[in-house]
Image (tube, rainbow, N blue to C red; front, top):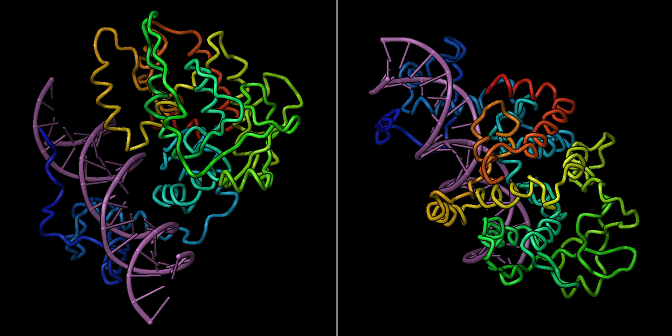
Amino acid sequence: MGRPPCCDKSNVKRGLWTPEEDAKILAYVATHGIGNWTLVPKKAGLNRCGKSCRLRWTNYLRPDLKHDNFTPEEEELIIRLHEAIGSRWSVIARQLPGRTDNDVKNYWNTKLKKKLQKIGIDPITHKPISKILNDFGTISGINIPSGTTTTTNSATHQAGPFMRKAFKPEPPSSSTTTTPTSSCSNNSTLMMVNNNNNDHTPQQDNYNGSFSLTPPPSAAAASAGAETFLSWDFSASASSSPLPSAETFLGSPRESFSSSCQQQQTEAQTAQGLMWREFLVSDSTLASSSGFQHEHDEEKAIEEGPSAALVPPPSEAEHFSARNDGDDMVAALCGGGSSSFVESMLDKEREMMQSQFPQLLDRLAFDY
DNA sequence: AAAAACTTCAACCGCCGAGGA
DNA sequence: TTCCTCGGCGGTTGAAGTTTT
């Protein structure tokens, strides 16, 4: 049975609130406090849905709200928390006094996402976009030719279908391959530049995390229309070095959360040459891309059945939560049964989270 | 000056879980 | 156990404002 509407939508006012309506809410809350929001419109003399009243109060009228710009510290915290727990805006907002989940969400969507994209970081996975695409090349058995430029932001989404295909369990005899470059067409180009030999060979898994913004080589920039060039220092060859993170750009004096996190993943990297987070790259990216959602659903429907093993992985937030509803999916990803690999990864991430965000983790555990 | 393109963000939508009857 | 209501949440929309052409 579907849930009935909370109010008669045809008879309630919608759209922007007037100062008079705001005053009524404020007056009502001042006298009665916050209680049953469905009764508020009637008692306050408003022709609005109760839900709308609650939203107006929580997102705009609450006296403890800040209405000024986000500070760099707040920005950094949002990025770090988003990397850790994903788009759980309410949880992130609780770490930012005076900010609402709507504020944080809007700020992320309009500013921070673009900011990260501009510096070549995928805002969903918080990994360098080139790294994602290069890894995809490795995973799917495709070597991106030397000198091939990889593309940013929407190109990642454009790569969705074939990336997903790459993760799809194939029968051993299958030789299906796809060609990434056919889907990567974007006027925003990201180039990987090796400082040592200055060739543009994509590097995989062995960069050391020294990662800086450099001015584009003029000729290449002009021809490629590059917005941002990323300069990588490959001088140290330690393969267990952390991946660069957005933190690097933010100049945080603290130990990079993402770096430590990713380092642990790297250390636990299996002979498969694939980290579990890689799965998140493919599917969380897709899931958040409305353009692929429909297609994804269709494919899922097709794939479901006795042999279907491609189950959307839980978000990182779900991994960090105390709920178990992601376990089956993770198990499915690993071919069924419990996986010590996944469990150890989750344990490590939890430990790391505990040390980095103890308060947050406590709250998550409490909430769920 | 006007139109088009782009950005921002308040508000809405629909789903979900909790909890009470 | 089932049904219903409510509050909370994340994703999305679209009006208003701003910038660019």
